[in-house]
Length: 247
Ligand SMILES: CSCCC(=O)C(=O)COP(=O)(O)O
Ligand SMILES: [Mg+2]
Image 1 (cartoon, rainbow, N blue to C red):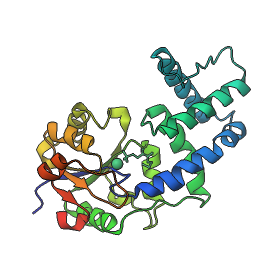
Image 2 (tube, rainbow, N blue to C red):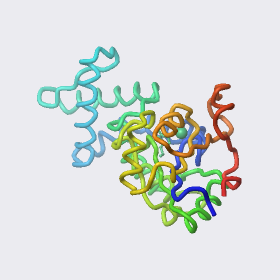
Image 3 (cartoon, rainbow, N blue to C red):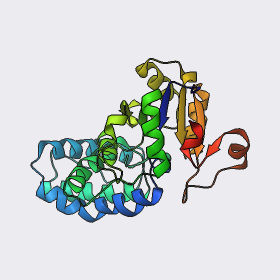
Image 4 (cartoon, helix red, strand yellow):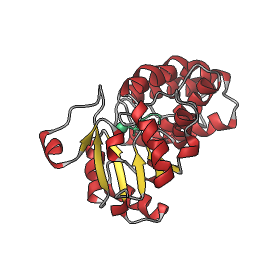
């Protein structure tokens, strides 16, 4: 018998190497964003993402963030808007910002990369094995800063085949920041289980603290290339580098 009913998984640093995100997925965006915006400018989905990035940029500019050049969707020409959006995407990605507007555009761009075969999601073997086993004994959900679309792509087009049949649902930062405990409370309510019956696994200790505060069970994912953990985390939390030992 497992001591939990739900497993909630982070992606980067947990099911998937950080190197894949930073050396494959992010460069795909940086290399293609200019051309992508130009080629698909009239696509209504692109226009939605452009509006979201413009809103975020204008909020950032008002908050005094120097890299954020305001975007005036009524007065700027399409060419200027495109250049400002591309420049904005560049600096946000260099800062590794986990902002919904950026993550939304990334997810939409990756759709074309996966569909063309240029991208394939990378998963740790033990994570895949455990997800398959968990899916028969409990339910597996994903909570990532990557958009729900990006999550469906990385698991749907993974190097271990289509893993979506093993996953019961997805959450991204539209439910709230991964570093705030209310986000975990909302997820438990949305799934309809008590927080103490959910096991959350992540590489990020601030996410682990937030989930712990919300009453979740937690395990810290230790993978090659993950950020170093503080002594306090190592002392107070369970760590794993092999999910099979959690079954
Ligand atoms: C879900 S694939 C894209 C990865 C990504 O953009 C990201 O920010 C991952 O963050 P996580 O919360 O999974 O560590
Ligand atoms: Mg992570």
